[in-house]
Amino acid sequence: MISHMRRLLSLSTAMIVASTAIAAAEPSAELIAAAKAEGKLTTIALPHSWCGYGDIIAGFKAKYGIEVNELNPDAGSGDEIEAIKANKGNTGDQAPDVIDVGLSFGPSSKAEGLIQPYKVSTWDSIPDSAKDADGHWYGDYYGVLSFVVNTDIVKEVPKDWADLTKADYANSVALAGDPRTSNQAVQAAYAAGLAKGETDAAKVGEAGLGLFAEINKAGNFVPVIGKSASLAQGSTPIVIAWDYNGLSWRDTLAGNPPLEVVVPATGVIAGVYVQAISAFAPHPNAAKLWMEYLYSDEGQLGYLKGYCHPIRFNDLAKNGKIPQDMLDKLPPAAAYEKAIFPTLEEQAAGKEVITTKWDSVVGANVQ
Image (tube, rainbow, N blue to C red; front, side, top):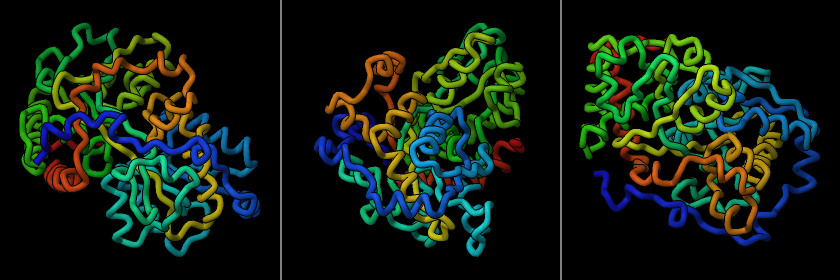
């Protein structure tokens, strides 16, 4: 059951604060040399507009001179796992070294033997609730699901999930992924279920599917993966996406058209994403160095620049590492006060219902 006690997972209680010395730790010269000898890192599912990854990748390349081979930027978490499975014996460019996936994919990937353990230098500043004790996976950032609205087309923005069934939003509502494979889309359906007042995870999933069935029946659902381009073109004037994606799209489009990012009044779900290294990584040392970079102060601030709350946020704030202009660009804290952080068990139960019953209940083939 989802308890109200867990609904507010504030940063002050979610984060473990490390000492300045630990936070300032650097990768060893031996690891850097080994990674440079490999000369390449293969990533997957990292759009440059997602969480500041464009600048993060550029920063890693500039700092270490290692080539980054970027596979399928628009892939979902499930696609990343399948890419590891499909390339177990492949040391070529189609085999991902690292993955960035939804929280529920961390334990399942470990159970299947698809990822290998590695603890970064700043390990102690990652909260215990957001990492595998053995180092197989660890949280990197989180955000909340929101409605990203093209206000050139939609004059009255939706305020809550139930609003999406209104006739005002005909042919307007899209998900930012396929709910059968994308964690972002799965969590959107889960959030819709929470907004209906359900608490049992499986029932939350059922309720979320029910709401999307209503949206589809009303003629409001657009069965394509919503992106900044489709928002700008008006083919999907309302996209349900993580807040950091919406804020990034807003900045990129720079008012042409104007976008509004709305955190819904109810069913506010926060999602933690996690990093992991493939058990079959062709470039294991480059992968470890990539993790060191992501969890360094520089890498974590890169996420914040991309509007994602980095997992080491409290550690950075305590040590005065966050520039004020970054803080000023974040949404007001009040928008996140109702945020719910589902447990791994709840996510797994909800995911099982949503991914397996989407076709039969909603009947929209998202492509």
